[in-house]
Every structure is written in structure tokens, then in C-alpha cells.
Image (cartoon, rainbow, N blue to C red; front, side, top):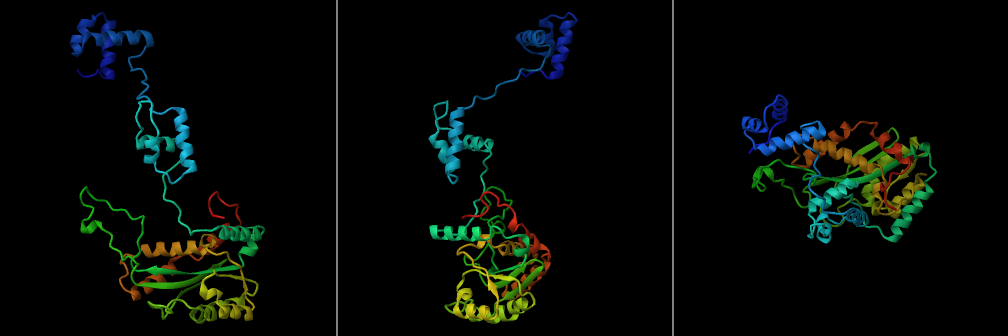
Length: 339
């Protein structure tokens, strides 16, 4: 028997107030007489025909269990909600569901996110990073604006972006138009060098003569011939008070490279090992990759990739380097860098 709507309840009360009997009203609305009696009783007590608030389904976890679920994931962030659910026996004397554990975590402010990726840091690495941070803690914006940050990055034809999503129907996972094809090693690629500073962008330098096999990568000689001599040395001749930053890659720490920089009077910033996350140029590479992802026709050859990279480089606003370097002296965000 269907429930009475709000309008029907109001009409039933008016009929009763006009003198109709509950039996007559029940026959008019085709409902059981007990329904009219309960409706009348509710109206007399509360003055309303609306349903009383319901408590809903009883919670299957106690407040103590809710705290246990929250603290377990604060202590072990990579633990899954399903693992926690299997260890919590609810008030219904059975393990709670994964959805219940997830709801308890979301209510406490925890969200299921992709983890940030970083290198494996030993105690020695962490101490070196902390020492570097303490040594530059009192640098002001003027000093940071006189640092030229540099790095190399490889860009491949087949770029596997884990954030790509596809809209598909059930059972169409392996349909040709729903599969992202990519080479396990990224396919043909280009090695780029670039540098950024306050109001300064050097590059892109696309290394020439690279190929597969030992000795065909970026060597100290290629680094000096294609980067330092044509780009870095002229820049520091015009900006003598700047500091040059590059990481501890072998071409950078080679004796010939260090001798060239020393003879040229270029001050090099000491850099802790395995610390790309504190180099603002890494975010510049992300901007470049974002521009490449907007290319309508996907590069299929190295020559096409070369043109696409150069065009994407020019599409990045020149003030982007100032935006990336500006916050270096700001108070650190919790969990922003690892020490």
C-alpha cells in the first residue's frame, strides 16, 4: 500500500477537522485505517504531518574504533582501507567493509591520493640535504635571484602519463581506441639542457651526437662544448656576480669541467646528492611537458619532437622563471621537501 504524500496528509487532516470519520478518510485515500489514526495522533502531538526524523542505519563502529582507524593510517599512510577493514570487528560482530573504513578516514580529513615520488635517501643523503638547507636558510630574495639553476632532462616520443583517463563502456578495456600504446623505454628521445634565473632563461640546448651504447651519452666534453662554452661562459661574463648551480652528474663533476669553471671565475653552488626536488628547474620541465602534451599531432620522429620541444619552450611565459624562483625564501610547507 503506497505511502501518503505530504499533500494527501494535509487533505486528510482537513477532512478529519471537518467531521469525517477516520474510516471514511481511509476509504477516500485507499489506505489502512491505522494509517489515519497514526497521522491524527502525530498531528495532535507535534502539530505537523511530516515524518519524524529517523536515526538511520546504526553505525557499525564505535568512537574508539573510529580513532583506531584514523591513527592506524596516520602511522602507516600506505596501508589500504581494505587491510584496516579486515582487522576491525564492528558492532554487528563481523569485519567492517572497505567503504566504511574509507568514510571514517575521509571524515577525519584523510584523502586517498597518489604518493609523491622521490629518490631513495640514506642517512648520509638526508644529513647533506639538511646541512645545505641550514647553510642557505638566511639567504634573502636578492641572493636567490642571482642564482642560475640548470639541469638536463630527457623527453621521449612515447610519454606515458599515468594521469591519462579514458571513457569506455564495460568490457571495452582492451578495445583498440581505449588502449594507450607506449614504448617501455619511451622510444626515440632528446636530451635537453636548460637554465633559469630571475628574468633569465637559457636554452634549450638539445645535445647532438648522442646515441645508444657506452660513451654516447652526455660526457664532460659534450657538456663543455655544447653548454658551457656557448651559453654559460658568455652569460657569466655579462653577469659576474651570479652563482651557477648544477647537480653532481658525472659530466658536471669531471676534473675538466671543474677546471674550466674555476679558470673562468664562475662560483658554483654546492649541491647535495639526489636532490632534484629542491631545484626549481624541475618544475620548469613540468611546464615544458605540459606544453608538449598540448601538441595536437603527436611527434612520431626525432625531428618532429625537436621542433615540438623548441615551440613548446617558446610558449612558456618568460616570467615563469620568476614565479618558480620567487617562493624559494618563503616558509617551507609541511612535507614539501624531504630532509
